[in-house]
Amino acid sequence: MMDKWYAVFEQQQQARGIDLRIVKENLKSLKVETPSWGYGDSGTRFKVFQQEGIPRNSYEKLEDAAQVHKYTGISPSVAIHIPWDKVDNFSSLKQHAEDLGIAIGAVNPNLFQDDDYKFGSITNSDAAVRRKATDHLLECVEIAKMVDSRDISLWFADGTNYPGQADIRKRKHWMYECLAEMYQSLDDNMRMLIEYKFFEPAFYHTDLADWGMSFNMAQKLGAKAEVLVDTGHHPQGTNIEHIVAYLLDEKRLGGFHFNSRKYADDDLIAAAHNPYELFLTFYQIVTALVDDDPEVRHNANNIAYMLDQCHNLEPKIPAMIRSITNVQTLYAKALLINLDKVKKAQQDQDVLAAEHEVRKAFEVDVTPLLQAVREEMGIPADPMEAYLESDYGNKILSRGKGGASW
Ligand code: AOS
Ligand code: ZN
Ligand code: ZN
Image: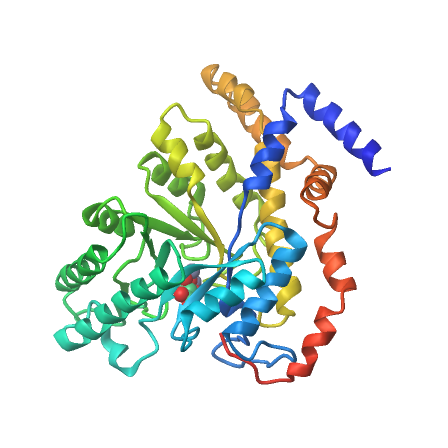
């Protein structure tokens, strides 16, 4: 039955001029990192509802993440957050990940939970606080080296709540000074991924409020600094795909934090609310993968795809699996866009034909394609169903309630 379904799918796509071998290769090379904090208890400022079976430490977070990889086959690494994942022995944490068939991914410093950072971390007017914050960044670079991680993901809560509260331009200089010191400590293969967010926790100004500020900072720092796009960090109506295209063209798209948002930084399951936006984001990446400029292709091939989510109501592991398969589904759809036909329509300035050609791919049911790819990768055809049929979810209940938060 399955084979027949795929055979029909193949025929249909061939008729549209799509080479499924390339599509499958691309799908097999997609890797999406999950965040260690997404396995912990989380909530809103109103309430954290504790779940049973939450990992009690970073080792157990890795064990849960390994389940996500086991059933999806495309999430072989886990981002860690320091100090939430600070352990006495990082080589044993690294070894634990390897024993589970995964690896430690991006290292995320925490510059927002210490009382000292009330008025900013690397933008604080107090030089001693800036020193402390920079030392933490340097510590995270060292941890990344210990666990063989390439990326340091940087998000700063720094900002102000009221006009006049601080000198915005001075803060910009202080931030550059601290990040430049951190930059010097990176090995040649390492990267700083600089995230931005337009508000929250600060409500008047945020020091890195949009992609342009992160881009400018990255450019000033050097080639090892790139921009990280968190899909939940823009004002309503922002054209994220445009930002992605622009950054790819400048060879500065470092990575993504995927999640869905309806109103603010909601951190919900990726593509739950806005699948078309993620599809169009992948459309920009797919065009960059075949760009004439080898540097643009290089950038498109080196994007760190990561989830950044908090599952406040739903069980964590299935929620991660859902996000991963959603991302994979939308990437698959974008790979089915006939770029030659779009190009032709663009040359003809045929607006309707161009838009139709793009949207048509979104409407394709890619289930048979994904099932075929998973079969070739030795992964269950339906990752969610396979996980739910396993006894892992029950087994971890013995951890009880009150596991790690974040
Ligand atoms: C915060 O809003 C950012 O999305 C961060 O990337 C992330 O959630 C944080 O670093 C995890 O603590
Ligand atoms: Zn993020
Ligand atoms: Zn966020």
